[in-house]
Amino acid sequence: MENWLMDIISEFGYMGILFLIALENIFPPIPSEVILTFGGFMTTASNLSFFGVVLSATAGSLIGAIVLYIIGLQLDVERLEKIIGRWGHILRLTVNDIHKADAWFDKYGPWTVFFCRFIPLIRSLISIPAGMSNMNVGLFLLLTTLGTLIWNIVLVYLGSLVGASWEVIVNYLDIYSKVMYVILFLLGVVLLFIFFKKRRK
Picture: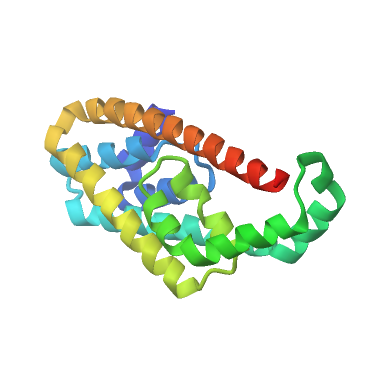
């Protein structure tokens, strides 16, 4: 897949980066780390500029985030209530649990949207619960832009810094991703434990 990504960036430049990042947001298994660090390298080996790569990547991220946000809007609380009302007993979930989760996202959603932009895979998918909770569109776009812009600047800069050795950065980011997944898994286990403990009481 890496060769395919590099070919598109090499041939189509900024538009290739915009397209790939938008696609990566909708289809997270495509590695944005490769796109951004290679794009950074290309700023030293072609006529692509640092700001041009960052801006095109950020625009692509916003397009992908908006698509997932709209998908989230289609899975609103009312629709989830019907699903949980019918199948919730299998997962030991109730309609009240949905309301609690929605209330939690209403309270902490903005910070969640911002900080999740720095976690691979989750950074894309967080747009769906934002849509599901009907998060304010302006606030969603603002925090998505800020978080994505920081992520893009750092990775493109690192790619330009190491030049032809940009794959070294990808390897380090792979380790970073695995560490974050372990932390999120442990956090999920703790939250599930607290959730079921409260349910028993």
